[in-house]
Image (cartoon, rainbow, N blue to C red; front, top):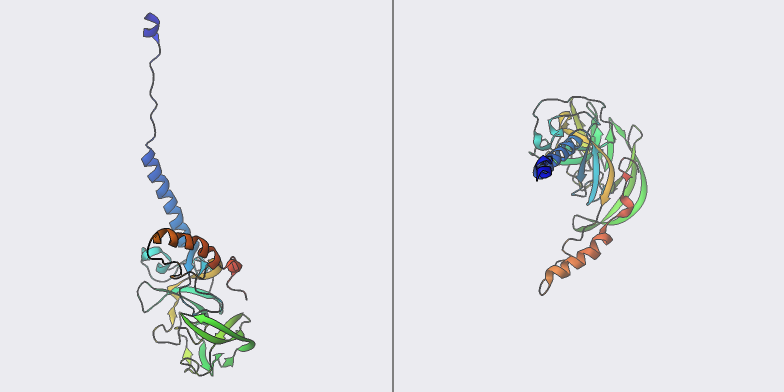
Length: 271
C-alpha cells in the first residue's frame, strides 16, 4: 500500500480537438486555393463553339491571371472593388486568347481572341479581316464537316496570319454572313477588339451586344488545356427497373470514351 501511495500520479496529456484541426486545415486549404485562383491560375471551361477550331466545347483550360496584372474582375465574386489595374506586368498582344468580363452583362465571362489594340482600325470585308487598312493573310486548308451547337455545318478552314505574325486557325461558313462585311471599328483608348475564330458563329466585338472591351475587364490569358471531353448528353438516361444502376454502368463505360485525350496539355496559343 505504501509503494502504491508513493506512485507518481498519472498526468493526462491534453488531446487536440480533432474537429478544430480539421476545420483549420480546411480553411488553410481554401485560403491557398483562393490565393492561387485569384493571382496565378484559374480553371475555365468552354461552353460554346465561338472559338472553333482552336477551342472546342468541353475543353477545360487554365488562365494565367498574372499575364496582364489584376483588376476587380480578377477576384472571385468581385470581392474587391477598385478602378483600373495594378501590377500591370505585361500588355495584351494581338492574337492572345483572352478571358474577360462581358462589359454589358453582369457576372458573365467571355473568351475570345484579341484582334484590335487601342487606336487600331478593324474591318471585315467579304469575310477577310482588315487591320489598319491591311488585309490579313489567309491560307486555305480545306473543308471540314463539324457539329456546332447541335447543328451540322460545313466549314472552310484557314490559317490566318495577323499583322504581328501570330498564326491561328479560323472557320468560315461563307463570305456574306452577318458580320462578313462591317463598317470600320476604331478601337478607343483603353479598350480592345475581340473576335472568335469561328467567324460566322461568334458574338464578339462586331456586335453591339459586346462592342469594345475595357482594359479593366480583362481577367487573364488562356494558357493550356488540362482536360477535354465531348460529353455524353442524355446517352445514359435510363427508365424502368434498376434505372439508376444501369445508368451508372453506362456512365462508367461512356465517360472514358468521351474524353479527348489528345487535347490534354495543348497550348492554346500555338497551332
